[in-house]
Length: 576
Image (cartoon, rainbow, N blue to C red):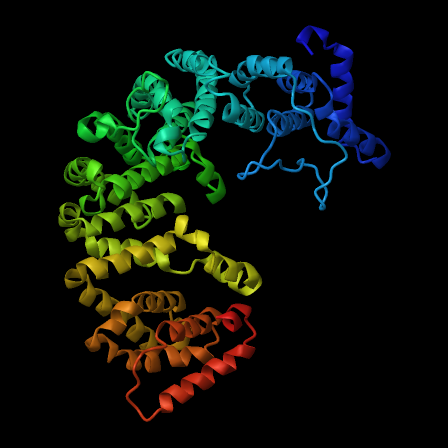
């Protein structure tokens, strides 16, 4: 159905149905929901939904609902849905048996053409985050099947909008074009070299525009939220284009992807402008709102700070440089084709970032804010730097600061953790045992850094660290019950337990473990502090193979203590 054939009466009827789907009256709501569910069978429905979505005078909830339905129909009906094995998938709205009332038809070509023609235009002009994100996801759904062959004008349209970035009045369109471009790049993010031809072409055409834009947005004079939002999208495009392979050169003459190694591998200096952008993003100061300095109006709540665009920029900068370091920066682990690049990175690039990374990690010890995700990523970078000789040489004078002022506080339980232990033990157990915590929790990255420091640089770090931990335990035992720092002790035991493999492997340390267990772990089985009882059980697991020198009394006592904790009033203790 062409756009001319769609009448305003049809659009108005759909608008009413979407509106009525929010009605508290079931007699009104049910027919409206049935109409919406049947939209995929109506020619021109996608065009009508797009018309409602773009109309700013329509009620916000109705526009949002239209955008959701448009995305869902494009995802389900653009091409026939098949599994990895090539078999047809059941409809999205199928019941548990896999049956649906009717098999959804594929969209008509004229509907597809009309949606592609208008969707990007609407997206570029959309100021609302929720609706533009839905539109961008719709672009992604379509690009999976149509880009570049059946949608050749998508990239030129986006690049034209991005090229207007010097005009402040075009900031919204530039940002939204970057958002859409990232969605297109993401489609190839995990593809093999042979399938990355379109992404290589995107990089060749877009990076000459994105680089000067990112250089301007990362400059010391840029403080606007619009600038931060645009820079974040540029960094996300860079991430999608580089995290698995550095982009290759132009495609072959027959249109197939160029699978030769990236030109950047042979000429690493070509990436220095991007490294400068990442470094500028990391060193940018983010003052508190009360200081009245640029960039102004940093939120005060933790949740709002985590979502603040300038902290997002730092997160992406830290994520990109850490990924480049781990994948391309360590010569001993590098594949043959990237060894030259890895040598350059380890000797020239990684040292450039140690200063900004350590300054970022110093924010919390200095009493300033830093998001958990940024701390986590910076600790991962330092973890890699500890293993590498050129970077460790620079880090060595600062290891005490990193271990005792950054890692140790990061590993301590927070007030939120303790409240969760007491009031929501199921969630506490879930978080403590979540396999995803390795990817976002500063506590896990701090533990990894401490263990790496002992593993690779034990001669410099082992004895001072053990002395630091022993002093904490001795101070705890010597302090009156009312004044004891339970959180500090819990963290000291956490570090000891995390080093169990190293301690058990060396006789001089293994011989001391019995005294540690008897003096600092056994008493905690009967502690009034629930999380210390939990830690005591965890320590038994970690040191289950520790040697015992007495006649077996200590081991019998330990077994009895553990059995008693099976009836502990705290769920995390029972589970541990």
